[in-house]
Amino acid sequence: MMKIITINLPEKYLEAIQTLNDLGVYPSRSEAIRTALSEFLEHELKMFDNLEENTFRMLIRSNKKN
Image (cartoon, rainbow, N blue to C red):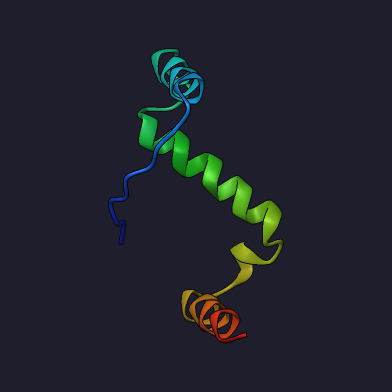
């Protein structure tokens, strides 16, 4: 399930994302941002892809309590 969010980006980021979209690298700006965010999370949370969604949510809740 996807949720809609609003983000503010520097204009140069948006222009770069639009260029990738115009070149056909990504079918939409949203897809480019989802890909970038996925790669960021994979790098920052090395185990992100290996976690079940419920396990990930428990970790997030646990982290907020600390």
